[in-house]
Length: 53
Image 1: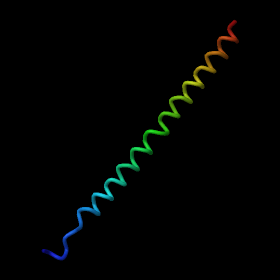
Image 2 (image 1 turned 45 degrees about the vertical axis):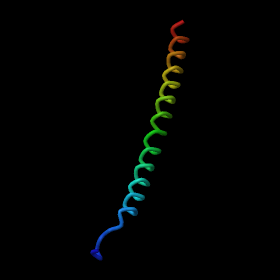
Image 3 (image 1 turned 180 degrees about the vertical axis):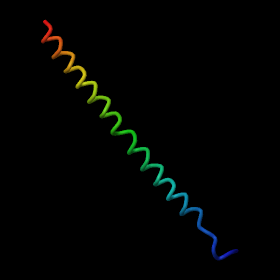
Image 4 (image 1 turned 60 degrees about the horizontal axis):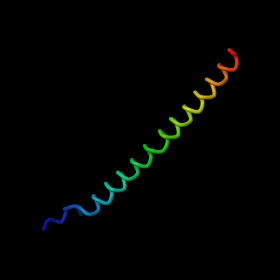
């Protein structure tokens, strides 16, 4: 057995940590941004409707 062989279990754990970190970071802010944009758009529509009438 060669002495310079890397432990595959360590690499797998590091990959799983990287993959889990990527999922949680990408899903949260996008949902909040969409909901916030919808609320702002709704408020603008109401304000314009009140000014026109």
